[in-house]
Amino acid sequence: MRFKHISLAALAAFTLIFTCASEAPAQTAARKTNPKSKKELLRENARMRSVLDSLLQEIEALKDTAYEEVSEPAQSGYPALGKVSPEDYRGNLTDSLLSIWYLQRRASELNVEYNMDSVKFASDVPDKVFLQRLADLNSYITLPFNETVRNYIILYAEKRKAQMASMLALADYYLPIFEATFNKYGMPEELKYMAVIESAFNPVAVSRAGARGMWQFMYTTAKNYGLTVNSFVDERLDPVKSADAAARYLYDAYKIFGDWNLAISSYNCGAGNVNKAIKRSGSRDFWAVYDFLPRETRGYVPAFVGAMYAFRYYREHGITPDPVRMPAHVDTFHIRKMLHFQQVSELTGVSVDMLRNLNPQYVHDIIPGNEREYVLRLPYQYSGKFIENEDSVYAYKAKELFSPATLQNIAASGSGSVPAGQRITYKVKSGDYLGRIASKYHVTVAQLKEWNHLRSNNLRIGQVLVIYGKGAAPAAKASSGTAVAKPASAPSKPDPSVSPTGEYVTYVVKEGDSLFRISKNYPGVSADDIMKFNGIGPDIRPGMTIKIPKVK
Image (tube, rainbow, N blue to C red):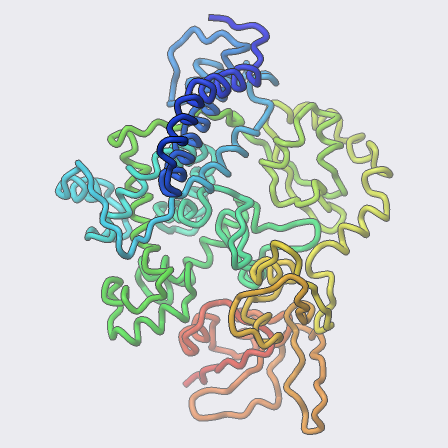
């Protein structure tokens, strides 16, 4: 069947108007005689949203058939693509990744909140079937099964079918990236499903605490694991680089705990909290430690098992992946000059939206290749055009796109533009919360609360907060009572003032320090040794006092 010039917007409007018009008289009459309660109105609202969402899905599915004739049966769960080969991809079929943008946010926003500590889901699937299916996964990571895990399996496989359909559509693009990363470090591939729990495959996800990206890194942890975060680039949003950093974090955590379930938990709450839970429980068994973990962390491993189950057995639960137009292949180019997405788009034909989806780490559409080498990812069908125009693409509209005023505004708007130790004030605006402000200025929520003597996370519009650039707070007050701002320091050197106290020496963390750099100054001591000795994770901050164990 071939359609010509179908107005999808008109189709959507007509369908919605027809639906509402046909129901409105009856609903109006009913309201006059029997006013609905707030609970009934909320339920009706949810139903209407579901109807509208289904309509949007149908429209997405029709977009391709509106222009292309599909003569073969659909393949691989993506009916919109049919038998179209990579060589036959055309602009009107695959040039827009807005469907990916839509699915990423849909997967993130469709969460129905449940109190997983008290809810008990029912399922037609017997427990023995769940048990057998988990065993058949043949996972390297131990997959426990109990009432808590069962609830999370049902949550992902039965209660969040729409969200799962969106994530399954995105998985074909992202999961191979994560598999290759974990294989590189000799780690279990199953860890790839942590991205489901962290962000639902949304590379630009932001948590209330200020964690960003598909793997939800806080600023300090990101810097400790080598991710670049500045006014132009936030590699927490890069699916490839952030996955690599996540793998290295989990590798470090596994070396500390020797158990993948505990390592996975530490990714959520930090190694220090897991160490505390182990000490309180007197055991290193996850389920013995479970009740001593922070409340928000307890469900992390059960959710991980539930997500892994749902991705393997979605067909058995009647879930079909959403149709999505994915790039057939992606080529990577190394960029060593300033490059704007608009330059690439106008000289190759690739859309700016596609560039943003494949390269989300460039937060202003600019690759600052003059600073160091960065990568540009392009769908393969545009690679030839880019190569043909590479000599001229950098000069195209360069004066307009890279004017001094433009670059200066970007640099000033980016967090981190405040010099280390410099004190500034920030006036709280509508929509602000501590996590957002902390993320903007590369500090922690705890630091904001400490500097401003806040006892809770509540803020009021117009409230003035004190912030110190890059988290470098003033040093402790001297005897004279005057506070001295702590300047940025050079790479760490052993502090000559440290005094031996038994089996360790103390060290005060300086600006720019990492556990790896500190350990290099103490022969025989590794970063892992320091983390274990102090019961902390890799996150450290200026002014923090840590203990360096003595080598016997």
